[in-house]
Image 1 (cartoon, rainbow, N blue to C red):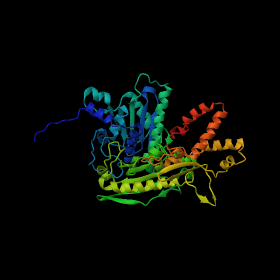
Image 2 (cartoon, one colour):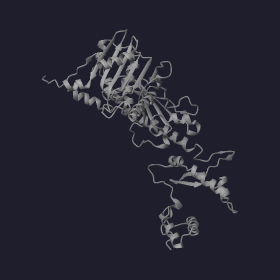
Image 3 (tube, helix red, strand yellow):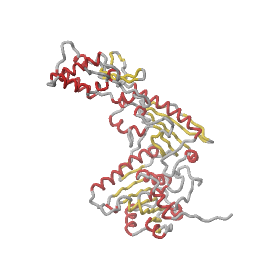
Image 4 (cartoon, rainbow, N blue to C red):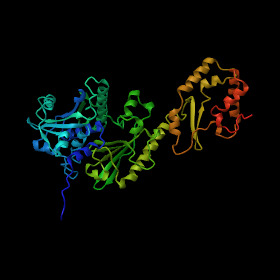
Length: 491
C-alpha cells in the first residue's frame, strides 16, 4: 500500500471549526457539558465587560485534569465518537471545547487542577496562523495569568475555561464606555442564562442537582412540559425499540392560557416563544439536544393551533450515530425505523392540542346552566369558517331594540367588539391547506337582501353626512366588502 500523509493545514482547520454556526449560548452550553462530565457541583459562567478586553469564563469545582489530560482535552478530535466514555460524559466528537471556543474568541486558555497543582494551556489563533503549526502554549500571558488567579481564588481543584479577544468586540470603535455595545454584551449573557435553564433543566433539579450561575445569578430550570401542573394532559409513555436499546417517548398537551396565571403563561412560552417551542424535545443523557422541532416530518409544520403539543424523547447515548447527532449537539435525524412511530405520536398530540384550543370556551359555546355568551361566534361548517356577532349578547340585544339604542349602549358595544376580535379562534379554525377564509355576504356572487339592506344604511349615512347621492354611491362601490360583489349598486 502506498499513501500520502494529508494532514489538515492548521489555519484552515481553525477557520472550519470557527464556522460551525455556534450561537454564543450554545457555545457556552458546550463548555458546561464538560463541567458536568467532570462531576462539578457548582458551575459559574462569568461575563465581564471591559470594552475590547471583555472576557467570558466558565468556572467549575469538578475533578479537574492532570497535565496530560489537559493536553488531550485541548487537542482537536483527540477522542472520537468510538472512544469509550463514562456514563456522565456528555461529549461525543472530542471537538466541543475547541470548536465552541474558536467560534467565539481568538484566545482560549484552560487552567485546571486535581489536588492543588494548577496546569495552564493556551490556544492563540494568531500564533497558529502565524506559524502554521498547532502550537499549544504552556501557561498564559501576564494579563491572562492575572485574570486566572483572580477567578480561581484559593480553589484546590476544578477547571477554568477563559475566552479573551472575543469575536465582534475587537474593533477600534468598541470602548469601555460604549453603552450600546455593553448592553448587547449583557443581553447575550441573559440569552445564555435562558438557554442553560432549558438545556440543563434536568441537572438543575432532583437528586443529581447542580448549581449553575450566570454572572452570579442562579440559572432557573425551564420545564417545557409543565409536568407538575394539574391541568397538563400527559399521553401514555411509549418505549420504542432501537437495536439493543429503547427510546422513551412521552407526549404532553399543555393547559390553555385560561388555566395558567399570566406569569405561568409567559414562562411556559420558553426562550423562543410558543410557536417555536412546540414539537419534539430530544434528550441524550438528560442533556437537551433539540428543543421544539417536528423533526422534518412531511406535512407536519409549526402552526398556532398546535402550540400546546410538546413531546419528550430520550435517546440512549450509544445510538448517537443512528440519530445523527451533530458536533454542536443541536440537531438530530431520527432513525428510519422510528419515524412512523414518532409521526403517529406527533399527530395524536397535535390533535389533542388543537382540541384544547378549539373548545376552551372562547371558541365554542358551552352550556353550564345558562349559556356563556360571547360577543363573537366563530364556527366551521362545510369547510367554511364563519364569524358572526352573537345577537344573543345583552349589549347586542340593547343595540337592536325596536325603540332604539342609547348612545352609551352603542359606544359600549363598539368597544366590546374592538376588544374581543376573535383572532385566536380564527387561527385555530383556519386550515392552512384550504381556502376557508370567511366570505362577506356569501362571496362574490350577486348581492343578497342582507347585503342590500346594509348598503342602503351606509348609503343613507353618507348622504346625511353631506355627500351627494352620486358621490355616496361611488364611495360605496369602492368600500369593502361591496367592491367584491358582482354588479353591486351599478345603477
